[in-house]
View 1: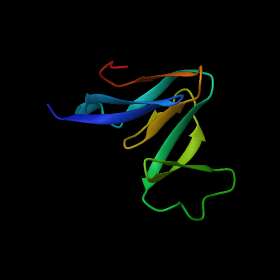
View 2: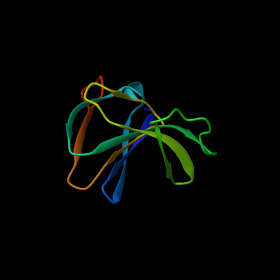
View 3: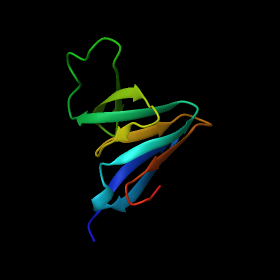
Length: 98
């Protein structure tokens, strides 16, 4: 079975979660506690012309657009989810994986 990865960043620790490919790119945020950020649209160079109010972040040499996570939001690969200290997020895939 082909597997895909979604990076979960929690506080100062980083976790790479491996998920079945048929559920890749379809994770939905179902619960949030504390400050949780979704990093999306990775690029090798900095995002130019980013709309006012849109944050940017650099992680492992890639530049991402950053936004506060919301319940019901889809997190697509190759996105990342970052939880700040004492924060939590639950991501659920169509096959029930969490």
